[in-house]
Image 1 (tube, rainbow, N blue to C red):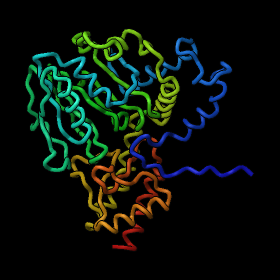
Image 2 (image 1 turned 90 degrees about the vertical axis):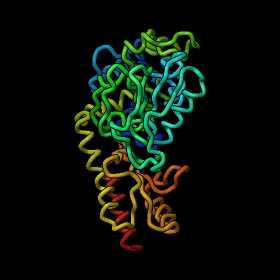
Image 3 (image 1 turned 90 degrees about the horizontal axis):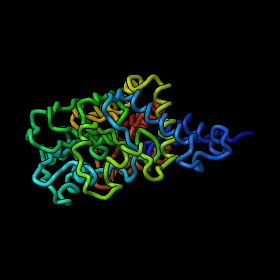
Length: 367
């Protein structure tokens, strides 16, 4: 008899869950991709077969996100962390300033990299660090200058479980968003941004690919007196094929985008994400303080639900029992501790329901 497929309740913060149907299709095509007699991993990145994969992924992303004309879609490497350096290299000139909104560890790292370069001046436009990043600053709290090279924000904060619900209109100041943790989880008005970037390993596919969506008028202002591979212009002029791209990762990204489209698009995914997150947030809110949410209600992330269990020893027991019950990745980030359920797009509703039931059961036994 065939072995029953075992799938964990995967709440890892990244690399994270992928849709089962995508994995099954990749498995079926692994040895012979579209009649080529080769795996997609064996195709030349200059071949017509791979070219179709590459361009299909770009077209799907443009369709699903409603990316207007006048933007380049790039597939890069190095994760969001490399973008922390590439952005000021390309867009922050000597004598200019760049504003960074501090909402967590990743925005801190982005600011740190901009300061390391020593070109221009990178400064804080707003920060909620003194409140342990429990909320997103209001738009009225943002302090930046009309002459700034750009303003940078992190749309979702995996460690602290907060998420922007509304984005500022920054006028002539280019707005740049790190959307690594929530891209495609809810609709976004791309036209508000001059650049959006995201590591793939949470909502777009496996690790190894970084998506950058850049408005062409921002690209025209870029500093080209930097190494070739660190210029966005290099990748834009070569359709992200200047060097060998992460071909299998881009193939998988395209398959995930197809899954989003087949699932009803971003609007349908959003509806399910709200339902999934509410299963867990409702248990927290109705626990009478047994579970303590980290984020303020108006800033809560749909993707990363962060909380503590009342009592240090009880929290340790909760995490042990959760793992025993098949819930993977619910430990909070090592820098802050606590608990975190990352309910990305591909995490099934059934996993969130099972986790909320486990939380209720644990509270009934120990509350």
